Image 1 (cartoon, one colour):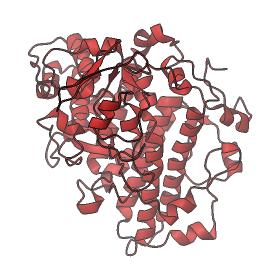
Image 2 (image 1 turned 180 degrees about the vertical axis):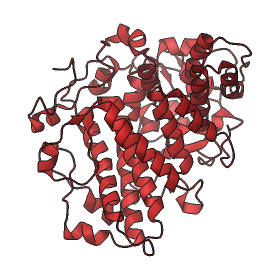
Image 3 (image 1 turned 45 degrees about the vertical axis):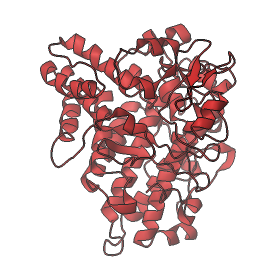
Image 4 (image 1 turned 90 degrees about the vertical axis):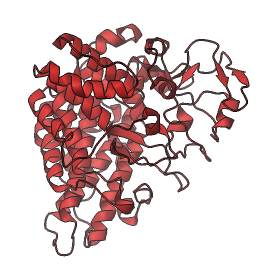
Length: 489
């Protein structure tokens, strides 16, 4: 699948059309070229692959929304204005990050809409994987909308191909409606149509378990804890075979199979195929030449994100996750010891003093890493299940999945906890288990702790969402239909 989705086919190239003024990528409702493409099973497979590719483009920046915005990651070297602005809550609505994010997600949404519209009347005898393609398209549309409402709040709810004129008349829809009418419904339908597993080159496509895992996260975000508990509990039982890896570090060992028992859904990247690799390895490395040389990382460093000094100091002694999660102390001047020669290199004061090893793998060309982005894995499911059980008044039952994650990390499990203690401990465990994987900011927001955690770096109470891109406001030119988010005017 890594290689499969790395080939942006003719179909997906033709479907991703650009429009005036950087507006939402809208497809014509009926063109000969596009209609011809939607005939065979392979045509629809190619279209679905193109939608995965579009999502992959957006997820290259998910760390800015999920990690940098939170309290455990920061940009220590002030050489990237956008990332710094995200970090200190000063990002402007005209910033390209927001503009591109809005566009990228609507590319995914519109590609999915075209698939779903055209596959509806397709002959199942010809399009033999019809149900599966519907499930994949609905999953991809749902996750795009889920990310969008968490980033921007109210968005335009577009569920079928539209002309530009139609889109100009489409208002922003309130978050609750987007959840109920698109996100939840799409994920439920996707789960009913997707297989449990894939084989061969198709491994990496979205599964039934992935749809249910994201649905569980959606219910948790909506504070519908009974439904979250039910769907997440399913994933711990037969016929699902998910299990934690024995060694946490193996999650980030890219010489091994990334589609293991803990894998549920990744954004897939592959090196050496031309613009198909990820940027994460180069993005998060400090400017320390011997370190880069030792790990075979060509193309340099970007120092885009580092663990904060406070977070580095929070780790418990004996936590087996620490070495791969954080290196360095965050203060000048750190050191790096070559594991082979024992030679120590001092970090200069002008470089990041802490970094993560989670995305470290040899890179032959800058920005062409094989490291995937882990959207959701089984440890996340266990911690969400623990949270749901606890919020449903089943604290004793919540301790079991919490302890599975905790003891894998080499820490002593909990025995008796109050509901309040369990709530705090689950949040803490998520903080360490999922560090640098795009979860911290969204966890802070959904639990109501964002302002307490980030007020000291510039957050105001309305900044739980980002401003809507200025170019969208200008193109719509209708404050009633399409207003800016409160506080950002």
